Length: 187
Image (cartoon, rainbow, N blue to C red; front, side, top):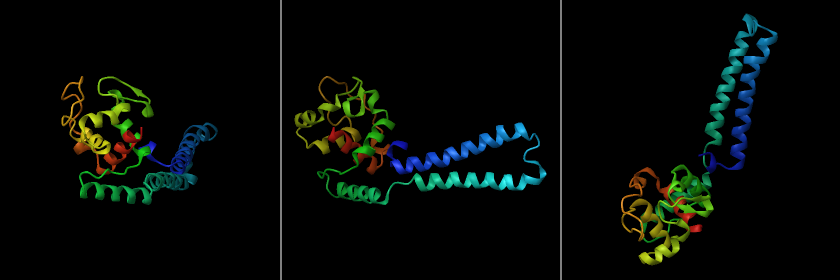
């Protein structure tokens, strides 16, 4: 998921996380070295409030910075609606998010795909998707989507049937599928 976040969101999470870690290290290791009775009865309540404050700030940062942009979610909702209204319509996903989906689902463990930096040979070479779609006599986006959701619908010659996981139709959301197809077709 971290790959799908914008740079600003990554920086925001990193800053809040770093502040939380620094506070924990200083209050747990540095201050007790000089004041063994830290925080003591006098500062105990203040220390507890600061701890709760840092905890709440970390939770808030994850909730705020972990969200997708509204524009991106609106675009993917539109692409999901357009892909469901017409089976031949090519879904328009976010290729950058598609790379994260590719990586998170371990696609590079079986497939060669230069944009993802993978060179495995268990499954077909995804750098040749356009030629595979022509062999199957299907539009590229439709071929790519079908190959992910129903991998036995067309088997590239030279590769065995049943090797590709059959679960991506249910485990990937419509948005993830559209993003993955956009990433693969762009490559």
